[in-house]
Image (cartoon, rainbow, N blue to C red; front, side, top):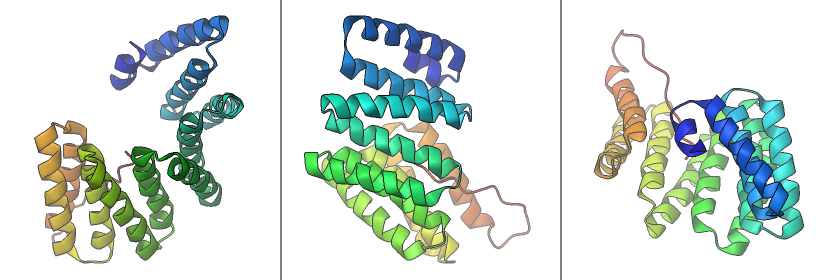
Length: 221
C-alpha cells in the first residue's frame, strides 16, 4: 500500500503505512525488515526535500544492516545515502558512499545494484564537467544492464549517455542513443522514461532554433 501511495505522490499516506510497518517489525524483532522500512521511510523525506531527516533514517537503516550482515541492503543504503549528499552538491561525500556501495555489490555479485551504482557514479563526474570519466562509467553500466536483461536500466543509461554527447555538441550521436532509449521504453511500457527521453529528443531538434529549450533530464534509475 505504501508503494502505491508513494508512486501517486501521496506521501502522507505512504508514510502512515510505513510507520505501521516499522512498528510491527520492531515489535517482532524483524531486524532485516526494520532496516528495509527505515530505508523506505527515508525516501519519503528525500522526495519532500527533507534531507536531514532522510539521512537520519538511512543511517539507522545502515547500522542495522551492518549489524545483521545484510550486505545487499547495506549496498543499497550506501547508494541512497550518496544521493542525499549529491542533491546537496557535496559530490566528494556522495562519491565516497557510492564507491563503498560499488565495492560491496561487486563482492556479492549484485549485478543489478552494480549497474545502478555505476550509473550514479557517472552523475558525479557529469556534474563536475568530467565527461570522459562520466561516459566511461555509463558504458560499464550499460554493458552490465544489457548482460542481465535489465531493459529499463538499459533505456535509462542510453538516455544518460546521450547527454554526454549532447553537451559535447555531437547531436547526431546523442540523437542515436536517445532513439535507442525511446524504442526500449516504448517496448516495455516505461511511460516515465519515455517522457524523459522525448523531452531530451526535443532538445536536440531545437538546439539550432530560437525557442527556449527545456532542461535535460538525467535519470538515476
